[in-house]
Amino acid sequence: MARRLACGAVLVLALSACSTDSSSSEAPSEPGAVSPSALSTEPASTDPTDTGEGAACTPPELCGEELAPGEYASAVGATGMTFTVGEGWRGTEYGDLGFDLVRADVDLPQVVSAAPYAGVVYADVCSGAETENVGATAADFVTFIADRPGITARGDATEVTIGDRTGLQIDVDAADPGCVSEPPDRLWLWDLAGQTDFHLNVGEAARLVALDGDDGVIVFVIETFDPAQFDALLELTQPVLDSIVFG
Image 1 (tube, rainbow, N blue to C red):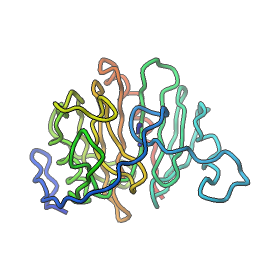
Image 2: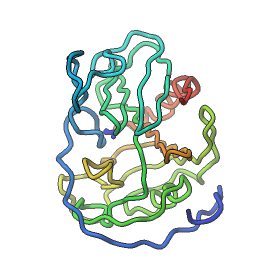
Image 3: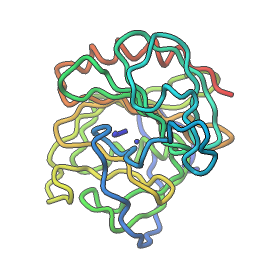
């Protein structure tokens, strides 16, 4: 998530970009090794007596361990949800910044992340030093992603419904953006509550699914470091997405 929005009508074939206002911010913390993208803060505590900021995961198994097939619950911001996984997934929760599900049976990282999007993005694809606001809808998000240096869309954005939420999804490849990033080979994308970033790495293929809701936009990112396995990962992931129930 690795791991971890109003500008007019939602259009499938062409999305109108929002105007932006730039502002400076401190770069978020360095990403960890939990996932290839940004949900890189420490996972919630596994101590059931901890009722502070590191309260126990919901459920406790969503703390980086391999998951038994079945139904699990988590949240992104104020939005709770349940989902069902089959064999071969490991799950980690990051408080209100979302969660990720990682394939436990492959060598190169393959991840499904869920994270909030509030319209705060990085002005420079190779730096986390400055942010700007581009609008807080699913359409704004997809427009921003498709325009990023180093991001090549595999086709037009399409409408999608998951649970009772609607939005847009787009499939992309991440390549060298033409600038030197820090850390190397990172495409900085959007800010997560000033605590960390969400990014893709050069060489990844990903599907980004942005869903609108009264409590904000949720983004699911399905990503792999082996683009040849992208279609297979989408097939493995679709039953998880189809099982999601919000609320």
